[in-house]
Length: 379
Image (cartoon, rainbow, N blue to C red; front, side, top):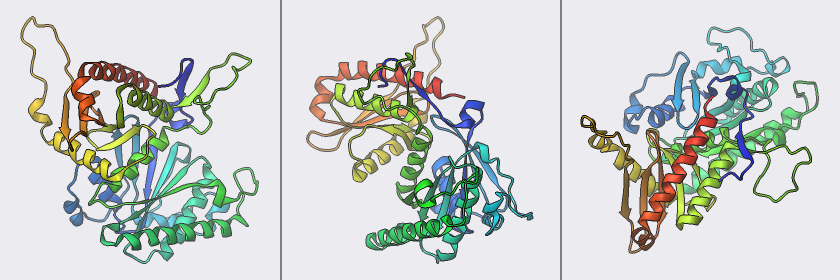
């Protein structure tokens, strides 16, 4: 957990002003932008998204995981306002489909590319979006969703990702020669722009992992001090600042060490995204098992809703817990943390059976610490 004397901080303007962090969802028509949002945050079945009508107006979706987000699903026609040459002024030409964007409140941009379609012109649009957004707010980070990869072979989808990454960076290098930052300084865009690429599909867990990475990135503060290193005390006695992401990651590491857990994830149960985990390597097959397990448990949650207390009885709150055995000595354990969050962890079956009492005690302390972090994260 965060070391004594350290506290999470957010470097995001929206957090300091009490507004929701805004995430823009951009991309061409029929790329699957709305489908991604509806499957993750509105519990749509993937097959039902095949019949969604094209988005014609900007849809704003309020999301509450660990932090409050506002996702703007912007129609593909709005890409026209990011035309060539607008990066010199940061102002888009007037258009009927233009969207007024409060750049100071935007924390991230998701750009969706259809991997099964011709994407060369689309990548040029992506470059224009990056130039306009960076001109207005250099702190924005970009996430490229290479979508609809479920129809591609493993070799081909990774080749597609490498090709898209190479083309994006080449365009950024070419644009750097004429581009200047907000103060007129030259900018090497290929190194200064914070951009990441994700392979996604609504038919597997990949889109949930991608949105999880974005949520965690929003909790990071690049200016925060790394409290995992041993440093001399500040001469002025000031506190070390750690990001919310680092604090949660440290808490998960401490829990794994004290409880002998092999891997731990903190899931937002309604969206099935995870807001944090320990630092052990990410194992996709194991994650898929946890992902399906939490989906299974969610289907039965209504059966175990709170029962009204009898008259005069002391009100108590019992959080649910569950465990399933994967093999001879490996289990997946579930502990509810609050009304939205749950801890899922892999643990040796023998450890879980013989140390259930100390596990429950440590989980309760972990729940208390996470609630405190949640209060700090609330705007």
